[in-house]
Picture (cartoon, rainbow, N blue to C red):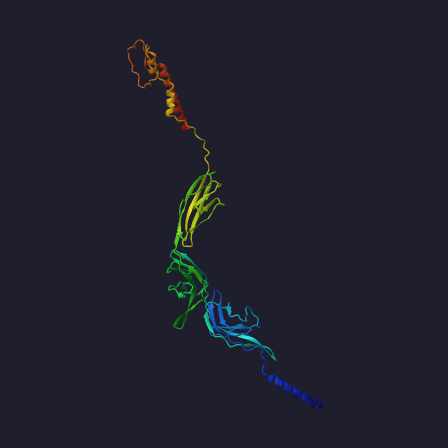
Amino acid sequence: MKTISKLLPTLLALATILGLVTTMPMTAYAATPSAPTNLTATTSANGIILSWEDNSTDEEGFFVERKEGSDEWETLHPGKYITGSGTVNKDVTTYTDLSATEGKRYTYRVAAFNSKVTVFGLLQDYSAYSNEVTITMVAAPTNLAATNSANGIILSWEDNSDIENSFVISRKVGNSGAWNTLFAMVDPNITTYTDTEVESGKTYYYKVRARSPRPSGMMLYFDDSGDSNTVEVVALTTEAPMITGPTSMALIEGYAATSTNAYSITGTPVPTVALDNNYEGKITWNNSTKKLDIATGLGVGSYPIVLTASNGTSPDDSITFTLSVTAASTTPTTMSATVTTETLATTMALAPTQPTMAASADATTIANTATTTPTTTEPTTSTNAAPSGTQDNGWSIDRIILVSIGGLLVLAIIVGIMVLRRR
């Protein structure tokens, strides 16, 4: 007891000191952060994207809370000191909830936090919550593309939703134009649309979102997905491609390099031509001449090729060309003989006409008679003897023999020709 009485003043002094400490205000490392504002939510192809405005300069991070329907709040990312992937760090103002299930309706809120040092250690301090935002998970379309066609601008996209009942298309004209929803809506599971109300030379922008119905009592509401990517396209006056020209060619093995006749190709813009096969470069398209160039070296066979003309305007046009290479002929050449008028004239010349000469004629008369062109008139047969001193001007026996021999020769040639032809 004597010992306790001696220690009592000391114990009272310690108690006083402890009381003062416990009643002192906490020493702040930083002020309480300001609450984030303007929280929004949109859906993507695989989750719900949250974004907000950061109003604090000294936050260490953010935490996100979510509830489904009227369920209790759950913390998706509670802060810097609680483990978990994708913690929202300082100055980051977006977060994607990848755990959202399509068709379910979620409500979200966000708060900022920082740390304070107290006599009890390091503690976290939280801002007030942001506004709440509610959204139904509808997967957004992706990979939107736009191409010109003869009928307008064709849009195509990838459908990522299983619950949409339509697609809504938005368009604006020019970079500074306002977005407007096109009147036509696309049925579910359809992933193309042609905008026919366009003018050549104008620039158009497009985006697409999926829409899902949500009954609520007697009312029917619609939940939209987030927008797809935005595409830009300049409308053009277009004409679908067309290609016409040769469809076949026949060559003999060992042929020389050659080309087809030219093809006719029309369309706006100017189409390009592609081949489905070039047979190791032996058959190629010449864009300058609009012909198929055929190199040497193709063996006996058939070589079909499909030529396709395209210019980005639907539909493409095609034509099939077939090259046929046949074997060279091995039949020997047939010798033939031809009887011409020159041959007959040569044969007849073997029997020249003898000039008629008078026995008592002088030298001048003989010369004139010798240069006279012989006639081919048949000789007149007379029973009277020729006058004394003159030579008969009819066909002599020698002449008849020579003509007969010539005729037989011609006949032999003709017979020979006929025999050769029959073989």
